[in-house]
Length: 448
Image 1: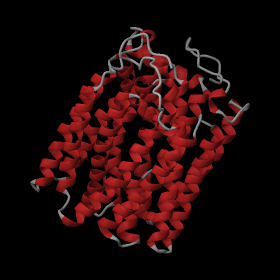
Image 2: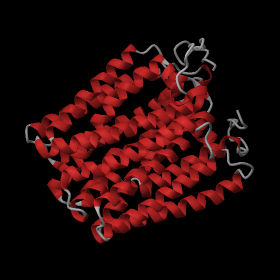
Image 3: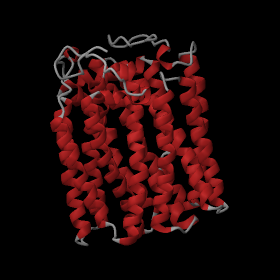
Image 4: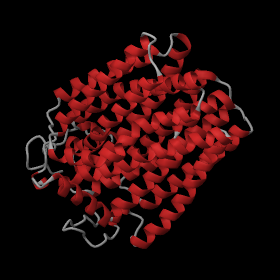
């Protein structure tokens, strides 16, 4: 493993321990990554608690799928406008300092909303306003946090770190909704907001304890922001190994990953199981996602295009099947099993896509390339949420789920055909032959 020439931007080579961690946990051998991982577990659990509480609050206030969809629009739309500039910022400034700033902003925003909810003064526009401000901060936080992973563990362990990050995310997806469902049915919504606000404090403390600073790479240069942005876009456009997963996650996110819109509708209207049941369904999704992430951590060696497309296609098929189960109002256990299968395929596909982009991008462009990835991934959500919300209002949640899952399957087939044309030689996506360089940015290629 090689370190960056600048101190604090990547872990330095060091002797291996006499007893190495198991293969699937090797990223934990890095001190700062351990601190990062466990602090994020606390914070993301709080985030999932609020996610469930907020969806239930909006549905209680409005009884409208469209309003649920609009929350996602407010939260993710800023990424479309600010996500790419966020990547330029991530490559230009120390990532640890940026993350301390974004996490502090989250604490202030969620704390303010928690106060309004606890005092009974919250209105719908308050939720929209905080979601919009949250999205603006996220446009900087997401590419910075994604690019910081390589600084924490080095390129050799990045796939394991991405898989463990997915396991982290989905562990919190299991715990958060389950706890929130219990709290909603016993003490109310406000406590979920309060606990989420408090959960940002351990992350801020962890960042302050880290030795890794994530300093800008020397090759990042001092060119104008517009030129720096153009370089990142040119590199991504010229490199099939980056373009294929970015297009895939964008389409899957837009049409298949609108859980905050249709899961509460399933719980309320199709199964009649209330807030506690809503938490059970989201926790089932988390259990499957966690299983997928751990499987990838322990058995994954390098990203594979065929496997990524296969599991993405399975994701769409499982959603169509869930729509049928919900339409006939089959036993809840069947829906829980399908939610777990959806989670498994979703986490595997997105982790493979993320790792491909992370390991392909050169160090000095990683922030900008990851901002393209996160902009497409998160920026597709508002469009998908609006589409699903409108479809569910007209035809019901099962129809909206079935349409979204069908589009995902068709999209995967189209991407598989397109990717074979631009990179036909192998299923290993890093080995895909790059397109001709654009703007002097030579794409990385070849097996490592």
